[in-house]
Length: 486
Image (tube, rainbow, N blue to C red):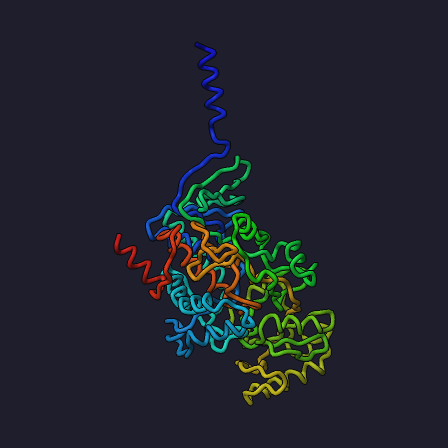
């Protein structure tokens, strides 16, 4: 009898699964703006949501986003008297991406971005200040009052909303592979700390793990010219979600399109927000001369910077610009900014030609007064840069955004190499490709992650494995109707 019992126990032990398993409706990989937007949206549609974040804190690259969230025809724009149109936002996005963008995705983005602003503000966020960003024809970069960092505000708002809803967010939870059954994605295997590998079974998985700018080997393999470049990204942006998607047959698009940001402090990777230029700053070289229209797209400005002495420039601004943008105070506190009572004093501290800098500023003030930049054709010159004291930051390009990634449709469903939907699999944010084409406009990343994060969350909740017919109803309205119908 003892032998029979022992044999039974041994048999049962070997029959037990090696990996612990649990159940959810929607599993989301990544807790940046896209992942948290998806999580809140899916939860509000009545679904059990688990968020897996491989880093020790939530927010991902969204924590580092500085400039704004681009959207047209918004309530904050109307309140400020800003005339803009969704069509203009779409055209700027396509032009900025060198016409390599997927126009269907961009229509989805620009049609719905204004609802993303409402979404964050309705959750208690502050996206009520609107500024100019490079490549935009109008002021449409929504940010906190006074011009603070947009990413921190969005993460704060979404994380608070997630905690208020008791959404299960697990940090140090490294997603390792997608679980597939009968051609459908049905869960995720992940490793959390020193615990054994675990599995969450789910009706749908949303990949929102970001791009691969912090994976130098991957960046250099795709574009050897970027070997050795620093990055503005947090260390977790290593392309894991793209690799996981590829392993289950997902197609990728635009992988060679990698963007550098032109205003990054050499040596430490600190990005100076594009809003500094948008609010009036100019770029000068070590000779004290302007060399570019500062509001050109990031790729153009980066390329011009690399042609200057030592491949650097100086972001130059005065006290009027400082007063207009709260974000500048952070750079000053970090010791990144050099200050001078006069342009000559600043030039001496920087070791650049004072006579040239003085001439540059005199010419620029005249261009600003005449409302015509006769040198480089900058259209928006909000300030003459004549109010002391004066400030400068040395900058150089660094890898900033990877435009390529998993191929999705307008409903955030991941597609295979034949263009068919992979049932149960969605993706949003920088892990995807097609939205930004050959170059991303500043402010469009935030629009992308919140807008497509919400779309992914909604569809993962409502129709995880079926064919989704695109609808004209704005996502916010659709969610409200579904929530009220419960």
